[in-house]
Length: 259
Image (cartoon, rainbow, N blue to C red):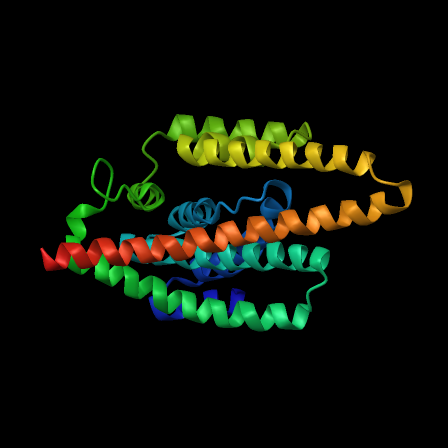
C-alpha cells in the first residue's frame, strides 16, 4: 500500500515532503485500521483518509482535487487492510486456508473496484451529480465530510478539542476509538451496530443455556459449533446486504433511465 501511495504521489506531482508524509501515514493508518476492526468490528477508513488529508494540507500547498485523491487512496488502503485482517480472523476460527483467502481477496479487490465504478457511472447517468449530497436523494454522508475537509476544517476549536480529548482518553486506557466512532457515525449506523451487538448477546445466552442442558463432554464441542454457525450467518448477511444493495441501485437507475 505504501508503494501504491508513492506511485500516486509521483503521478499527482506532490512536493517531496507531502509525498513522504503520504507514504508513511498510509502505512500507519493501515495498521490503525486493522486494530480498529479487531476492537470494534468497524473500519472508519474515511476518517483515516481525512487525517492524512489534513496533515498533507498543513505541510504543503496542495490543490483540493489532489487532496481528495489522497484521501480516497488512503481510505481504500485502510479499507482493504481492515477487510483482510477481519477475514483472516474469521478464517482462523473456521479453519479456512489462508492461501485461499488471499486469492479470494485479490479477486474480490479487482472485481469490486470494477463493479463499484460501473454502478456509480450508472447512478450518475440516471440521476446526475446534483442528486448526491446532504439533503438530496443520495445523502453520501461520508463523501460530504471528505469534500468539506478538502476546503479546510470548518470549526478549528472544536476539532482541536476533539483531538485533545481523544489523546487524553487514550492515555487513560479508555477505548477512545470506539467512543469516537459512535460520535462520528450517523445514528442509523450506530443503531444498526447496537442492534447487531444485542442480537449477538441474545444468541450467546441462548446457546449457553442449550449447552448447559447437554452432557459435559459435549459442551465444548457445541460451543465451537455455535460460534462457527454465528460467523457463517453473519458473513452471509453482510455479503447478501452488499449484493442486494448493488441490485437495488441498478434497478433504481434503470427505472430512472427508462422514465
